[in-house]
Image 1 (cartoon, rainbow, N blue to C red):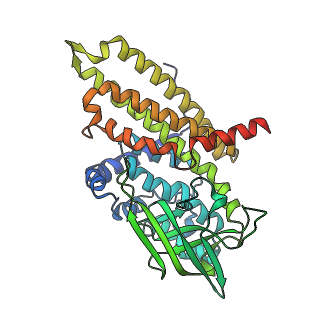
Image 2: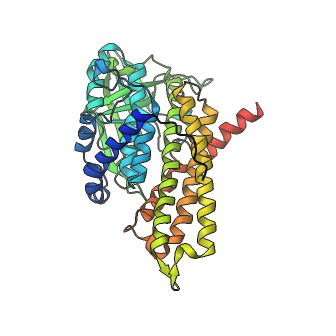
Length: 386
C-alpha cells in the first residue's frame, strides 16, 4: 500500500520508543483503577515530567525541553491512542498542548520563574476554565467577572466541564474584567487561580459516558481574591489570547482523533484474523473485507491531511480554518471508524474487555469539546463565503 510520507525524523522516533515504553510501564498497568476512580493519579504527571514528556516547549532555563516542535506532542497523542488510553490521554495532552502554551507565551519573567518549572516537572497540574453552564462554545458570552480591588481581583462565577478540574494546581480562568455591550469579545482577561485560594471551590467530578479517567469538574469562584500578579498578559485581551491558541488546541484533538481511528483499525484487523464464525475466520467474509478497506482508506486520507496541518503548525502557517477542518473531520472520522470497527467485534465490542468498547464511549465527546463540529463548520463556511 502507498504509505503517507513520514513527518518524523530519527529523533522523533527515538522519542516515540521512549514514550511508548513509559506508557506500557507506567500507565497501562494502572488504567483500570483510574477508570474506576474517575481520575488519573497525580503521580503520573510527575513521572512523565521526570522523563521529559511534559513541557517540551518550555525553555530549558525554566525546566522544560526547550524544543518548540509540535511533532513531539503528536507522537504522545498517537502512542496514548495506540494503548487505548482515552481519558488519561486527555489529562496529559490538555496539560501539554492546550494550557502550557498560555504560560509559555504570556508569563512575565516573574511568573515564568514561579510556574514554568513546576509545569514541566508535573508538580503543577494545569487546567483551562472557559466553558460556563450557559455559554457552551460561545466564549464571548462568558459571565464570570473579576472586579479590580487594589492589588487584587475579586472573582465571581462558575465554570463547568473543566478537564483536570480536580487535580489542577493552576487554573487559567477566562473572566470578564470590563463590560462593553458593543463589543462582546472585549473586556475578557485570563487569571491564574491557584489551588486552595480563598473563595475557590471545586464541585463534583462529573460522571460521564466515557473518558472516565479524565477528571472533569465544576469550579466555583465566590469573592475569590486573585492577585493582579496572577493575570496572564494584558487586561482585556483575553479573547485574543484564547483565539490564538485555539488552532493548536483543535489540531491536538484532531491528531488524537485520527490516531484513535488508526488504533481501532489495527485492533480490528488483529481480531477478525483470529475470530471465527460459521467455520471460517471473520476476516474471510466479504463484508469484513469491504468495511476494513473503506475504513483504512478513510484513515489514510485523514492522516495525510492531519499530518500536513501538523507541519504547517510547526512552520507557524496553520490558520484557524485549517485547524477547524482538522478537528471537525478527524473527530467525525474517529466516531465513524470506531463504530464500524466495533460492529466487527460483535458482542465483545460492547464490553470493556476489548479496547474498542471503551474507545467507542470515549470518542463521542470529541465532536463536542474544543468547539463542536457545528462550530467548526461555521468557521470553514464563513471563510468560504467571505
